[in-house]
Image (cartoon, rainbow over all chains, first blue to last red):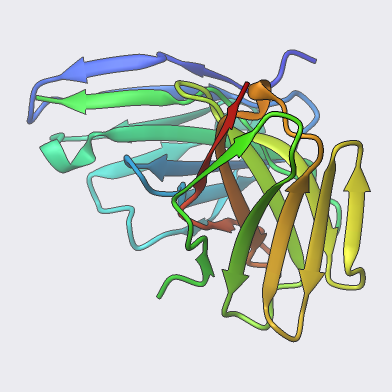
Length: 115
Length: 113
């Protein structure tokens, strides 16, 4: 078990560019979550997948954001036309559905800086 | 509407003493709570959880207490060690079909040698 991994760990981009982040969950976990964390705040939920199905999206997830989880394995989060307000740590977590008592395990995050 | 709150942004404790981190919640539907620890440049690491059917859960140096009537939980670390210095978050899952977590704003714990 290698834990949840995320790539890249850091991304610096110019405003208006598109960026894509990848998350590889713990292999047997069927749930995958994306969160965003800004300085001094707790992580905020963005979206979640049960296997390959995207079941819920936060109102924080504007139409510039899209997430996929093909085949229920790794997931990607794409931000189009980045804005300076998108600068944050993007965290991925995975869990095994245990009837409401699943524990989410987080990856190291991708820190995005939009110049 | 911040449903999970950690009102102390920071806490400083001497090594060997007890650290008490507090968390309040407003949503009476929350029935499961988790504590995470976060070091700089790393993702949150799960520490300990508690179900609403209990009022206490202990794991080594870490104990979480839940007071449902007050909608309050606390994390006790005894004895505190310098390696415990980190930001601590309490969180509660929404429940139902999805278990997305609602986090508090975090408390930065500094344990002085």
